[in-house]
View 1 (cartoon, rainbow, N blue to C red):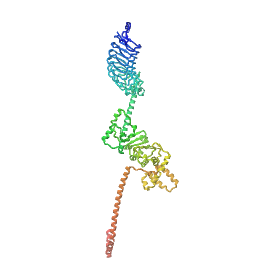
View 2: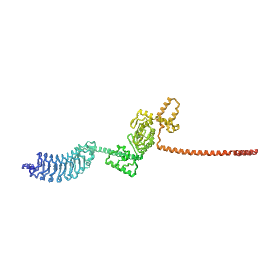
View 3: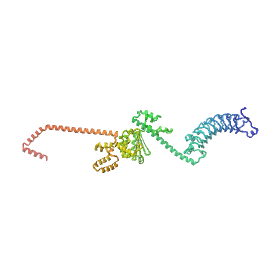
Length: 612
């Protein structure tokens, strides 16, 4: 054909190179027609400008074909070369692996430096030993099943992020993955299942920059002899084993912490939902419906504006393993107790029972902050004496969703040993809507010398303002009550202080003030302020029942006294009516009795004798 050059060699060249032909760097744009060379076994077209493979279908004895560094865009024209063993197509413009169906004897396939994006159409090459796909556009590795003889796979300088099917290559010994985008061992974990792999490279990948890289690879691939072109020593294997065990322990601990964190989040969600039901913020639903809601993918924090949304830091995506583990967690817990550093956090009213535990001296002494969440303040008041005893170093109290609704409730905190900081979260505590609540706290708890309220430093001006606003309140509370009532309200220590104040009346003013100041320092809380106390609803109800019983007893006692007095009065009136006649009869009987003097004397002597 006139469009293709025809190649004819001299007899001397044929004798000298009988089975090979080299057409390297001949500026060829097409494959020439090679006539009378059917016996060729090696053909070299390196460094030309050939765009298509053609005119070689008659070379059926060809074993080695080299088309390196040309401009070929498609693999074609090779279907008759059934004896071909080596095919070199590196540095071309090939975008797809195709048309290799008849090359079942292929031993080496070099496709490096092309534009291939996917490994495909090679599963029939069961005799292939070497496959070079370096410097292509591969993003992943798969479709390698069937390459049962493959011993070397070169994938350097691609864009690979994960590897699959490599463990199905029974003879693979060398795998080159340098300079790709592999960042985790999980993306190449199939390599750990390969029993034949002895040489591998990961240099140039993000994974190679990790501190755990080397010992993780060696621990999971014990059969390796070379890593990143360096021989693996027994010492490195031993160190890898030690480090891997530590990493496994760290991972197990991290997994445990993640599990506990998620369980905490679920428990808080449940406590919050129960709290909302108690506060009538969301309608109560049947147990079977409740189960459906908890099992659904919807976050419980989104149900009718539940307050769980206040804990966004507890939410987050979970891996599949952790999600599966959490399926077995119970979310029926209605309270949570947690000690984190110096903070004791109590969620739900049931958590208050934890104050009865036998806390270790170290843990109890370490706690300086106590946080109450989703607990009625009236219930907290009942355990404040225990809190003072169990955690003597607690200086900071936090209240969130505790129904602090009135200033009187702060009076209950006076019974604590000491409070340096107080945090009242606006959520669930309407009392903070009162403009003067902070000043009332400073006034009522002035004996604690509070340092911070809701994170804000307390100044001397704040203390002066608190005294100006509420000082008269304490004076009125103490002056309007009778002494017996004040003594009944005060505790034992303050009773002594009160009596002391009463006894010092009339002494010199300077002496009274000085002694009063010393007494105040010893006792702590000012007596006038002690009049401002708080009675919980339950305690008030108990006292109410007690008062009712006393009233009932007093009423019955008074009724008995009235009845008895009435009877006495009636008897007295009857006596007054009968007395005149009785008096006459008494006089008459006496006159008759002493009428005979001798007989009367004998009778008297006889009575005296009988009495002896």
